[in-house]
Image (cartoon, rainbow, N blue to C red; front, side, top):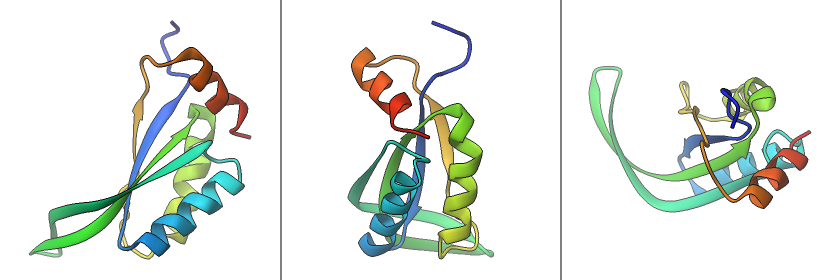
Length: 108
């Protein structure tokens, strides 16, 4: 295994299923991510502009490569309705080799 990851998992929250689906479809369509999984039913408690907020959200898990991360992040931030959307990437340190190869093959 090399020092740098070949695949990244990118977390993003969205205020609704429609927004989550639109962002997932546009990212996959532009080959910025190989896949976007929508996870309904999450609840986020956070501080925003001095207030404690408690909101229902959708989580989207994108699979991408390090060389496409910046483009994916910019795409999500520009298209997202939030002022400061969550876009967090973590390395995939292990996985099914055929799946990881599929991710790399499907990211432009």
